[in-house]
Figure 1 (tube, rainbow over the protein chains, first blue to last red):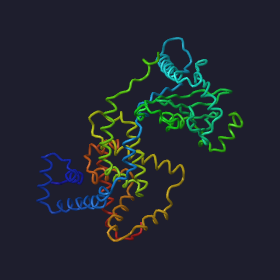
Figure 2 (cartoon, chains in turn red, green):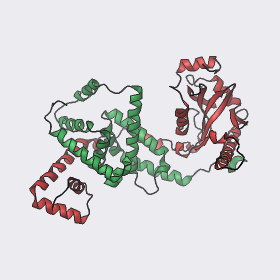
Figure 3 (cartoon, each protein chain N blue to C red):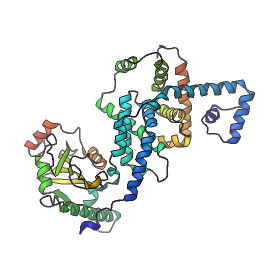
Figure 4 (cartoon, each protein chain N blue to C red):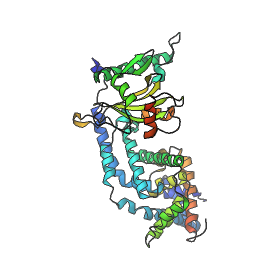
Amino acid sequence: MIVSDEMLMAYLDGELDGENRAAVERAMAADTEVAARIARHRALREKLRAAYGPILEEPVPEQLIDAVRTSNVDPARAKVIPLRAFRAPAVPRWSAREWSALAASLIVGALVSALALRSLNGTPVESMDGRLIARGTLARALTNELASRPKAGAPVAIGITFLSKSGDYCRTFTLAGREAIAGLACRDHDAWQIETLTRSEAAAASGGAYRLAASPIPRPILDAVSAAMAGEPLDASAEAAARTRTWTRP
Amino acid sequence: MVAGIVIPSRRSMGTRIDALREEIVDLLPRLRRFARTLARNPQDADDLVQTAVERALARADQLRAGAAPAAWLFGIVRHAWIDEVRARRRRERVLAPQELAESVADRTSGTEADFLAVEDAMARLPEEQRTAVALVLIEGLSYKEAAEAMNVPIGTLTSRLARGREALQSFLAEPIGAPR
């Protein structure tokens, strides 16, 4: 019997059923060449296991164990609202797109209500001509705060600032609270238009502890950033310069 | 009131996450070892594992209920590595060949020579072959599990495995110090 190399490897890897395994074993007993090939492959596996085996005996760094025990699970449960759907132009008939726009605006409505509940000196976002515009505390923070100089205990934390592909300044933000709400806002004339909002259940907020405003930016927001960003995020001095220009296009 | 709109907290999900956390802790030694076949520098390998476990927990809902997390986690480590390599290329901070040579030369001592020869041979494999070899020959995953971790059909996995094995045999047969 001719034993293909593939079959021989599958034999060694424990992937053959009883009949094929027996066939390889018969071939091995009858043919020294087959036996030699198996021995060669087996030796390779032993070499690999001997080389990498000791890594299993190393103590696992505490930092890794801590990361597993405490890492947030919320990005997976984040509710992402792509506001493109929300802004979809009206069409004469009810299309799937319109239905999804309706659904999106309902979710946005729920998020906006949840935001309003925070009573951050008024509603932080407002719907205007089918767009969401930052208001109150949020708008002030987007205009005035610098990520390079974060303020402890501030209700809004600014994350990344960058120039969008259309040449406008955009900034990510996080609103403090038991349920962190994060978003991306881009400058549109004199206002900050909200491009994406996401809410994540604060699984890490055990015991009702409030999350810090400076919690990491959820992945959905990061995805929106990488889709919108032209070039690299602004560094501290470029961020300050943009603020001085009151966020007008460079 | 808004209370009806707020997403209810899912206690059952929380319990499942806690169970998953402990399973991941148990798998950490193997995840570290697998990461070492990708990033040779031990610190880089541990950073890679940390990135991967954070990602895994963030996407815990992608793990099918009742599925064993090992193959899924190995797959996430591999993805995190691919992302890392891409990011390094973007930053153009890939180790220059001489730096790599130095970091290897740093720790050449008696008993480590065998490990270095094997590690060296592994590093010369294309990533896809190296991952197949690491998952099946070192980690002992079944073909099905390894194919799942690499997100390829079993036939693709076995051919990568076969090519990886052949290449390793020939690299390891070379006399030490042979030109490449």
